[in-house]
Image 1 (cartoon, rainbow, N blue to C red):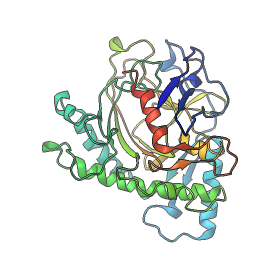
Image 2 (image 1 turned 60 degrees about the vertical axis):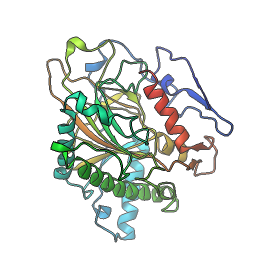
Image 3 (image 1 turned 30 degrees about the horizontal axis):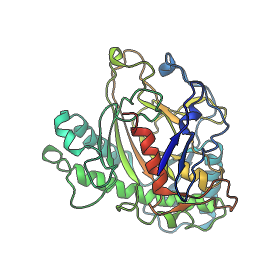
Image 4 (image 1 turned 135 degrees about the vertical axis):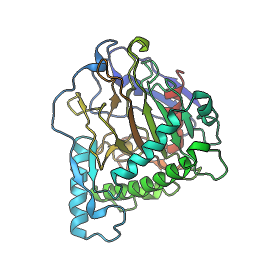
Length: 363
């Protein structure tokens, strides 16, 4: 297995994604993100640049198919499919409200996660990513990730729940409920994501299980789907490196991502190649398209680049979010569902590992 990373130019974020992966069976080519160019990265001023104006991200009522609803009329499902298709085609992001997961449940997960993040580093270190049989499970320390490899490490911590194996160690003591809360929320997000994937398939005129068939092993060691609890500590201006932000520009890797925000800071790149701010809407989940779904749908649904900026000057607040990254099963081969072969077939696990190498290789 050989990675050939093309040179990063200083003018395009696109270059972050222009890597080639070659093996005996697969060739990875860059995705067609809106167009071939992105706004220029600068090393000063970007962190607090005001967002460009545009229409807001659509908000769709998912109540007809929310968690707990098993019977939905054809008319309601058809209407929901049309709304979702329009939103995801236009922006790559959509808010869903009335999903069956209330804000109190989300806040409980954030609260127990924050208790972990506030522990001394020596108590978090035993749970570090790379310490488990699943390579992505565990704690990621501040600055370890560079989601934009041309920037210094991201100013965030994370705890990844990728493995639900019964024999792995979890934080205990004052965090006795940490495991139960994280696993329960993982399973709730799993069920919601499968409903969203079904709606997406139907919206394209495909069989309802077109995407579901490649997501049968979520929660097992044969699937990389991950619940990430993300914590952005207070920013000390004097220690921020040139060009460093809370989360560098990137697109997600798998099928879709569910994002539960506690406050603003997230920005997404729209079709006009302008970064726009994404507000937090209590009780709603933000859904975005990821890379493999873009390949799957031959660019009908487009994976959107996004980032998290530094807070305003003299703002010492923290930020938290929960993100459920939905990944196809490890052995899934993603091919264009319209038969166009716009992108060559790609193995889900190989693509994920190539992305990990790009993200963590700089640290």
